[in-house]
Amino acid sequence: MKIKPMDDRVLVEFEKEEEKTPSGIIIPDTAKEKPRMGVVAAVGTDEDLQEKIKVGNKVLFAKYGGEDIEFDGKEYKIIQRSDILAVIE
Image 1 (spheres, rainbow, N blue to C red):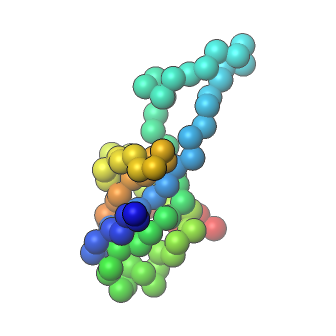
Image 2: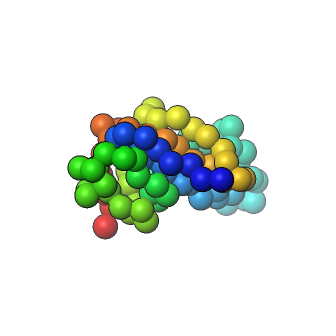
């Protein structure tokens, strides 16, 4: 099974990172901010968007944009074109 975003939406994958303080205390996910950068896993059906955003691009997106989902043990966010702030090269 695959996730295929529709229209002007992009599926972005996050990498889970365990953060530790210098003294070795692990910071739980609930206490830290969600990432605002990720790797494009799929691009929606909008042809103009497909020309600008490609699978594998790193993107920076708005802090409160999109919907968080978990699928096959990985964290994703489905965001609209307007929430994408930049492509990181």
